[in-house]
Amino acid sequence: MQDELNQFERNEVWSLVHRPKDINVIGTKWVFRNKTDESGKIVRNKAKLVAQGYTQVEGVDFDETFAPVARLKSIRLLLSIACIKKFKLFQMDVKSAFLNGYLQEEVYVEQPKGFVDPHSPNHVFKLKKALYGLKQAPRAWYDRLTQYLIDNQYRRGGIDRTLFIKHHDHDIFVAQIYVDDIVFGSTNKTKVDEFVSVMSSEFEMSMVGELNYFLGMQVKQTSMGIMLNQSKYAKNLVKRFGLENGKDFETPMSTTLKLDKDEKGKSVDQSLYRNMIGSLLYLTASRPDI
Image 1 (tube, rainbow, N blue to C red):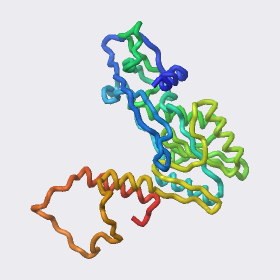
Image 2: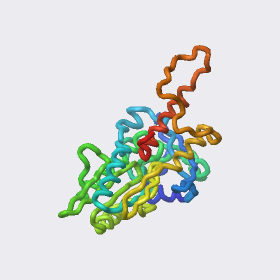
Image 3: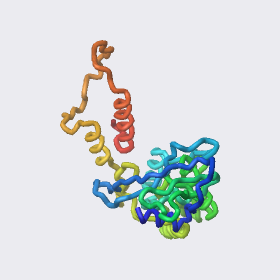
Image 4: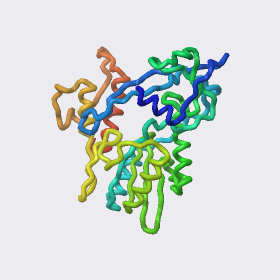
């Protein structure tokens, strides 16, 4: 928790001011989670201070909120290009990415619980930069990152706005942005080092290394090509929907069977059903046979 607040100080996220009159002050809360690797092993404990964005008032505390994110198809296409061009992909994430986004609006938040200034308990923080939980935070971060990359001669994709490309002679560099996760690679290793240097000079980065786990996909890069699997994701699905003791069948039921409504049957939980279907659709990233 203290590390999180230290980052706020380093990034000059806010300043302590007198509580303004007749101004909406947004609450804050702590969120704790464990970050795991592809095998499910806990690699880091994270404490994050987030704003209670649901108390924001549109037109007062925020205006534009939309920020594009990479689609799964784009990630698969990037993996395909890496296979064809025979280069390795790397991954990094930006520590507290949203703290780098500049706010256009005037926003105030409460002091975090457990860290209230004893000399100014009634003061509030005026935000200079975005905070996780704010409705406009993804937009502010995306604008800041995009502008920085464009200023460094990286070209943004015309259709996929989260893709950045840089050409040099016969070499190509590509980077795909997914919020605070960045997957990148190049046919020239020097361009990879250059990108890491550029990003690290402006933002606080972590976990720089070969791509092996991303968006629930386990990625194994070898000289023979790239192998994808989602075994961890699949196991979590089975557990999530209470099917650990279920029996497996290659074909669960006849494909010629005609179905009709069971008038006396128990109603299906539509939310649970949609969750199952959506989760199975995501599995097709590595299992197109489903």
